[in-house]
Amino acid sequence: MNINLLSNQYGVRKILDKDIPDVVNLCEGNPLYYKHCPPAVSIEQIKTELRALPPNKTYKDKYYIGFYNNDVLVAVMDLIRKYPNDEIAFIGFFMTNNKLQGTGIGTNIITECLQYLKSIGYKQVRLGYVKDNPQSKAFWEKNHFKPTGVEDIQEHYTVVVMEKIL
Image (cartoon, rainbow, N blue to C red; front, side):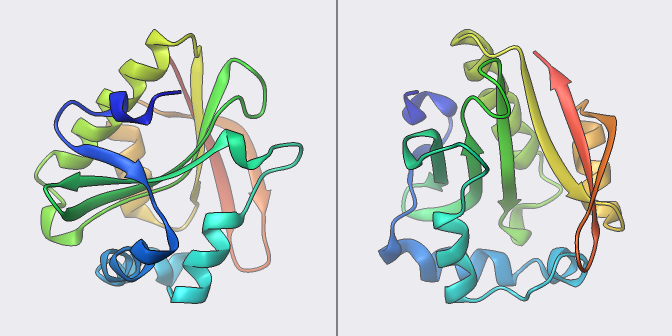
């Protein structure tokens, strides 16, 4: 996967440890997300996300990436290739800068990513959102993701699994 092709509008690169403070700043601007999906954002929490893997996946399958307008981080995505099978890509996390929400930037990024994923052979994209978070639900529905009927009950919340056929 060539992450540079995930967007024509933004520079895309893997998030490194040195970028964590920028990711924390972006995430802190979205307190509603963390109200529904604890724990609160922190440097340690982002470090954990950078290294988290689903079952049977390795770091070669994980792309914790930032979308940049020049040097400004506008969005963050955790993308897992070939999960849960070879035809599916999984978005583990996606968040835009709160100052840019409502401008279409998030939808544009997702649209470009899905187009690229389709062009390299993926048949669908899956993700999960926290059931009680109306903002997340509305965003993914606006981008034509549909519930699969699977819900994953966690300690503090329930995750609704959604997918989009490419």
